[in-house]
Image (cartoon, rainbow, N blue to C red):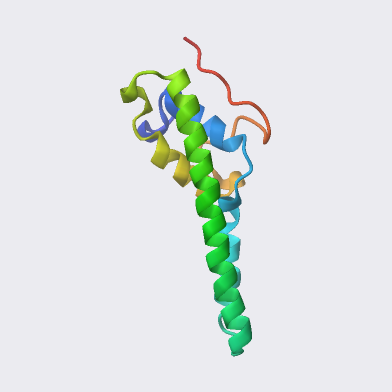
Length: 122
């Protein structure tokens, strides 16, 4: 009951637990972006082109990983919450949560990585 409005509800709690129970590549986007920024100052064309290609490849991996996460989340959420109104906004909520570092997520994770998301109480 102390959560902000964007985090309230059983569907949002399920989404948080689902995202927090998985390892996602997107968590490391900040570190990779900083590394690309630092390596971009090196005046070697070979290094700069390698860094650019690696960054685009990493971004593609993030996109595929997030897409798989969202497909799985939507399938599981439809089982838990058959009413479409209950599931409103969970896709964007999950995407934004995956981009945050696990230690900095608010509200903090309730499940361990590899743990099962908690089922909502009826």
